[in-house]
Length: 195
Image: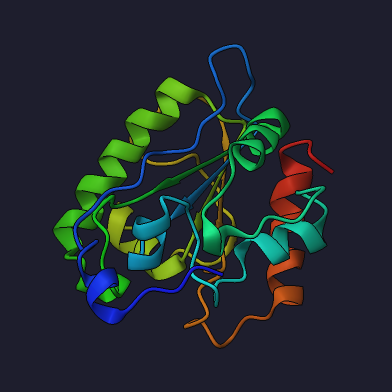
């Protein structure tokens, strides 16, 4: 596993990580949306890369992924190709790397929500799964939103899709386990036709 000093990680503050999206000839079935890149994610240029993050283990347990991904070293090209081939994409509400999501302003999240709506219209996913109900509420002004399938598509979009809010897989989210995350991710995987 890659190891970084605190100073090395801090040097990646405000760095962005490009979206992982299938190519133009591939269908985007399921777009996962994180809050923003953490410093480890920025350092490895791999979404959800922190060793304490349960994203990839939960996707594997859910059956959404068919092979394990060890993101802490940085995703391999083969890992990225497997996700794209399955029709899985990954983006973020905000693209600026921080040590904690709480460092983002509500304005950054609202602007990120507007940018995400444009991405959804361009990339045309079947299902959008936003990981983190608090960030979703801030980004879209949906103060009463709960986890699960949302009654309406994402505000500001024109492309039809199912919108889900799923639990954040960060190790800081102590309410969730790999098993509980896997149950939530299996629901969006079924909705996207991956299971």
